[in-house]
Length: 125
Image (cartoon, rainbow, N blue to C red; front, side):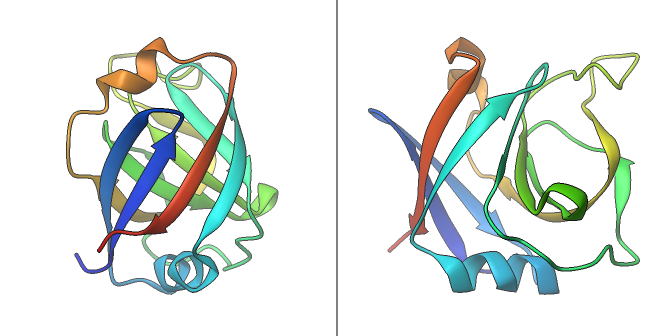
């Protein structure tokens, strides 16, 4: 893991660490960034101009707390529980995504948030 970032949603701060991938570098290069995200099960996703093509690490099965880039939507995804594409407790993306990092703390505050949120992403100093 590498670059540490902060996700601010209203009064809630979440911390994450990006991995060493091209898609993660692309996101880090865009920070600070404000992203309006929609909820799909226990996943938030929102367009933020991420354009890195799917890499060899792309997959659909994710883990709770993982962050990913979804090229078809130029979007950032935050997985925090089951999604409609899955059949169990683990999140599953609608189509392959590039894993770019993970939350370093408890993702459960996301469960109490609404259908759309605005996330302020910044480097975590």
